[in-house]
Length: 542
Image (tube, rainbow, N blue to C red; front, side):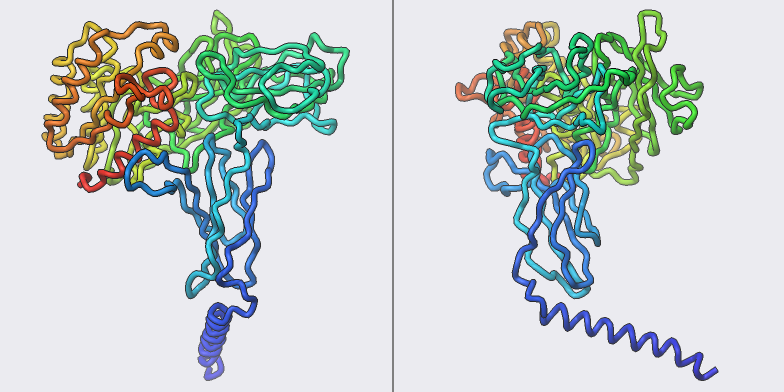
């Protein structure tokens, strides 16, 4: 019995000795690693994903990996970098999302008794080049050949409105540049509004290998940067071509969170105009994956035309797992081919909401004409220094935003509500400034009735010429007077944040095209700027 009682004491002694040894190792640094930053780099894994790797220290330790984006430099007193995510691991590697903006990573090692070495220097995501070039994701090699209609996928270029793909029978004479190739040019198309395309190669059956390259285009089809490096396509003409849409989850920001009003995105099939999305709260059974018929327990479905995105008209505020998939359909609603793979996202549970964002498409997200709100690089929430639930909905007028206050805001009961709505009302000549002000005043009253602090954001200027070109609609010629009237009301409120002065062009009359391609929605730099301005007013949050 005495020996049994002594055994735990012996283990405790061993543990103390091990801790003492670790303490001595960390403090005396026998390997001479302290004071030196870790050497770190990226390697590419499958489907274009990246792995951040670094040298492993000889000490028992863990590593903190931090992900940053650079700030715009337009707000006085802001730091150079904005922290997007912080994570820990015991391995000397970390898989990172292939985000659609340049991001920077650094790693710091920690032991039981403190930091063990200097933080690594920030390492930039290597998928971004200057001038911008798309980086291909799909690779068709002799061991993994393409069918006659392969999906060609590449990393999105920030603020690209669309893409041009060039098919070649041989490599170009030189890589990059902005001109079509004089060598082996077969065809090109710029009618591609997402970062992927299903090519139809059936007319080129005399080849067993082709090449493709892609470049990003702006609103007026001018080149953004240069052609990507030519990518070979090895073809096996005996393979069946894919007949299901491809879920577009290739480029994601860290800690991806679907907006409360979800948007579902895919890469479309060649020549197909109609798609149907179905939503479930249970995963698709294995025997039904990629089948041809709808699931009997789906909770919602919607058909869209000629698109690669589907906007859910209903909010999905309930915490839990959601699953969705998409199929191509004909005019009668019959499946063309098969359903896509099933995608999955999680709505988190919100026990205490410090802040929520309430408004129209500028709040909901998206930009550069083609990018939906699920592309979180186009959401100002991504660049806030505090968590905020996104209650934005695309297409809202101020009256439509007001109408959903009880259903969307009250159940969450946020302590602070960031309110930005009325921009769509500026464009509409039938809606007056007083109409918008009445809606804002009612939103304010509802906040006060529910013990929510209303923090109004001033409306930003718009650019009517950009709106006309992007959306083929005219803007109320009195928009500027309406904006001034509405913003005067906002700036008379106890809590407001003034966005307006930061968004003008050099003439101080319209929205800066560098911040918004379509003249209405701020793009990546504009959404970054919104977040940075709001961050400077964090003391107004309760």
